[in-house]
Length: 359
Image (spheres, helix red, strand yellow):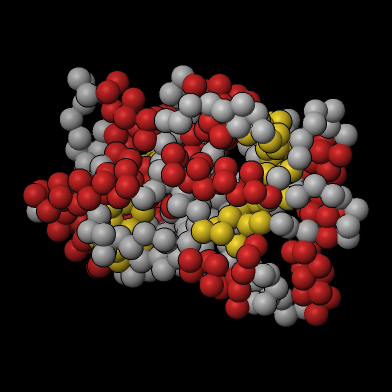
């Protein structure tokens, strides 16, 4: 890890979840640093963060006004706004687009920029994107789709190699090394999951599966779907609440394989679970998402299955379960990929270089 440099830039760090608390937990190896989008390592590059005081709102309008108030009336000095999402930053971005806010705005854009069929919304969207000075995206596919809209300039879009906090997972593995032996399959994550296909596939195999998921997310009633199926004893579902990455990471580290069964949405659905598998050196079975920057099949870190292919999922599960040497090789490849190309150290440096250039 690089030594801390004297402060040369102060930024306003905007996150859509608790930040100070998570940052303190990171110091104790209780929160993975990649979910803080580089914050823990920015000081190594002379960047001092002014942390946004997170507050939850059910109304997006209230969130926007709250965020704008905190930024515009912040008493600490900063030179740029760095956001992990533009959700909540809309008013600041619009003021920037209109020339009424002078500090650069840099944000993560989790999906590709899209066109709207509504002419008024499309015109407003084009104005809105003028207020963003730089956008970080997870893959070249997202960048290509964004450029196809002709709403953003190529120089505003940057690929960042987002990956896991290896130190966090290495510490976790040391904690559990004495008392655990990996076994079975595990599924975590709650965003756009295809739980029906996953459960029906495992019901055909008899292989042990632990599922950790919320009862409902993004309008998808996971519990209702699961309750409508007749599940065998090899499948166990645990319904979770809140943000509990450390608790779930410990559960994942006890399993042999990670499964990521998602619905077909045009962005990197399941990426957080995938990079966790890389850090833990675990082979994956994953829906074939073309928006991932890493090619699971080409890198030989797991098996991909077309969306909604129940039989394909069952076959992939059987293959990993019955070919331990191949699975172990995939796990080694996964960890090597994280060490060489996708990790917190690498993407924090990429972010820092951009912040120092723009801020």
